Every structure is written in C-alpha cells, then in structure tokens.
Amino acid sequence: MKIYIEHNGCLNLALDYNVMLYALKQAQHELVQDSQNADVIIFAGCGVRSEWVSNAIRRINSLDIGHKEVIITGCIANIETERIRKMVNTNHLSFNNIKDIVNTFTLLDFDGLSRVFSQNETTNFMGDNPLRNKIGGKEKVLQFIQKLDKKYNTSAELFFKNNTSGYAFYHEDEPVEFIVAARGCPYRCTYCTIPKGRGAYESVKIESILYKVENAVRNHRYKIIIIGDELGNYGYDFKDGTNFKTLIDSVLMVDSRINISLRYIEPIPFIRYYDVIASYCYNKRISLIHLPIQSGAQSVLTAMNRNYNINKLIGLCEPLTKETSTIFCTNWLVGFPTESDIDFNMTIQAAKRLNFNLNTIIPYSPRPDTIAISLPQLNSESTIRFRRNTLEHIILEFKFAQLLKQIPPISTIEKEQLWELIQNAEDSPIKQL
Image 1 (cartoon, rainbow, N blue to C red):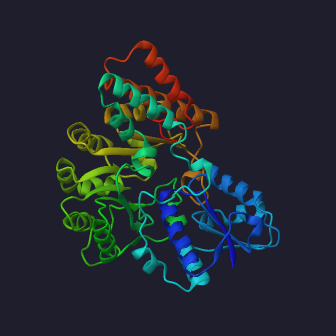
Image 2 (cartoon, rainbow, N blue to C red; image 1 turned 90 degrees about the horizontal axis):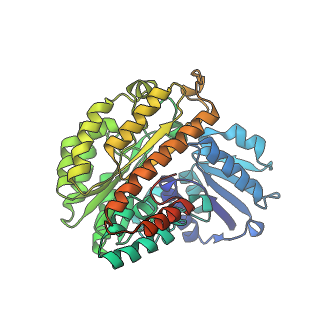
Image 3 (tube, helix red, strand yellow; image 1 turned 90 degrees about the vertical axis):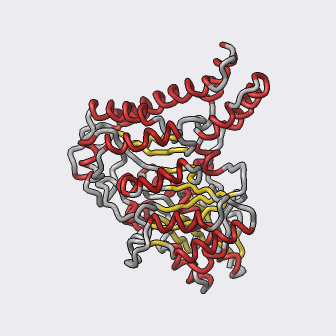
C-alpha cells in the first residue's frame, strides 16, 4: 500500500510518529513523498494550541485528498474532531491513535517496536513541516559567534548553544539517545488539553527503558534524553512502588558515563524529588531539565489548578541555576483569562530572577472542554500578543546582555552586527517560540 504521512507535532509526538514510520516500513508499505501518489494519507497533529490545529487543517486541505482515506492521529484526534470534520474537505475521514494504526496496518506491536527502535541524534523529528524548524537563521548567528571566539579566544559558543532550544534538543553535538518513559499527564490544569489529547497516563516499563539505555551504551551513546508529557509521576500507574526516583536511579546506574536530560517534569514532583534531582545536578549527571512554570503570579497558578508555591519553587531552583551546569528550560503561558497587568509583571520578575537558559513564551489559547474557557476572558487577543512580545523581548535582551559578557573585548560594531543577526533570525536564537 502507498502511504503519505506527515506531522506538525511536538518532540513527544514525533518520537511515536517515527515508531509508526518504522512499523510501516517493516510491513513493506511504500511511503510516498507526494500525496498525489498515495492510497492513504495519515496526518499526526498537535492540538495543544488552536494555532496548531488550524495549521494541521490547512496542511491536510493542501494535500491531494481526492477519494483517498485520510486518517488523523496525534492529540488532535481526541481534541477537535468536530472542527476537523467540518473543515477538512473529504468524506473519507477517520480518527485513530498511533498504536492502533500500527496494529491495523502492520499487525505489529507498537510497544515491542518502540523498545528496539533507536532514536538518536541522526533521527528526523521535524518531518517536512518548516514551522517546526528549530534552527532556522540561528546557524548564521552561531557562525558569527564562532568567528568572535576565534578572534578573541573566548567561549561564547557554548553559552549560545546552552541557551538555544534548537541546539539543546535537536542539533546534538554528541551521540544521544531519545527514550520515551511516559505518555499523558495526570494533572488537570484548567487551560490544558494534553490529558484528553494524549490519553490516560502511561508509564513505560522500566525493563524496556533500561533495555534501550543498555543498547545506547553499547553504541557509545551516554547522553540519554528521557521524554514524557510528565515524568515526575513515573510509575504511579504501576502500583508497585516504582517512581521517578526509581527511573533516574536505574538509568544512571547502567553506566557512570551516562548523563540524562528530563523533558518534562512538573513543579509538584520536582519539589517532591528535589533532593535526588539536586544531588544529580551537582554531580553533573543531569544535563538538562525542562520544568514548565507557566506563571510567576500565585493567584494565576491557583486559577490554573497548578497547586505549588511559586516562591518556594524559585528558591529551590536558584542555587541549581547558579551553582550547577544543568540547563534549565521552562514555559510561560501569558494572557490566561484571570491574568492582570500586575500578574504579568510578576511573571516578568520571576523569569528574570530564575534566569533559566531556555524560555518558551506561549500565548493563552482557549481550548475546548477546559475549565478556563468558561472563565471571564479579561484579556483581549491584542493584550495577549502584547504580553507575549513584551516578555520575549525582555528575555531576549536579558540573554543578549549575558551573551556579551562571554565576549568582553567585542567591539561596538560587532555588537550591533550580532544583535542584528539575532533579530533577523527566522527563529531568534535565544528566545524560544
């Protein structure tokens, strides 16, 4: 069978998408590069933001659908089925999850394939969708910084890469293995559709994770990126005492050369397991932690149903960002329905105080079947855009000032050239979109 397949999803979806590709190839299906030549079209889409659903619909309608079977999978298969049915130009449309698609088209077991299929620094996670290009114009910025380093005998390149999502996640400089440890999220934030889109929380068996870690080590890959919509509750669905500490202890015990990245862990389990996390950060065994904070205002966090103390969280993070080499990443959600100007300013202050390496600023987007959509919407779209642009600009300038400190002898002209390159990059190298 000839199959055209595409996605516009995040890294978490991309990992499962690649297992599906692997399964279809194993079953001898022909994966075609043009939808015109396909018998079946499969599209895996992101439903976390309305913008990405709209992008998915545009992409699907741009394909040569005709009378072909069109299968929608990924988060959007559970989140916005009615909107997609109304707006996609076909009567041959169905929705299914990736595991069932693999079973239907290949009769193979998804979990078994995922266990043996290696995804590493050579793997394409972006597909053919240019909107998911994480490098963009950053290469020109990197090349300019490399010239400055050579000229002044400095090391700004390392700072730049540590503060740039494309290089931290997708453009690895050393052998790396990406391993999924959990899918779904057990929390119920009032704005979020991930629990609905990804399904019930599911931990991958520790034996399967360690099998992949051991294979990675045999292939001289000691950098392990552990992926999950929420890793901190790992094992709670097993009911046998297995937990997040079990996960990272077990992985790091395989080989003393291993260091891990954690993407994502929510603040509540981060606080719960802080002692073990901090210990591994100080021992240089954890190279990166993605910790979505969302707001610096306690009242907004309460309205979001994110029940942690923001000041306590900041106090725990500060020594780790100042005293360890661990890269810290976060998400800021701006324009939440109850967010006031004062609340937004508290987020700005929290972002400055935390000084995380990577900051993704996400504009609030009303999502179906969430509590937040029924709240009084205090912020207009223009206000949300303004806050997003403001926070991005503040963080960009803040990080640029830190970058300049890595190159003390830089001239005024070179400083202006570097700033222009950063601003002209397709996706600015220090801000994360």
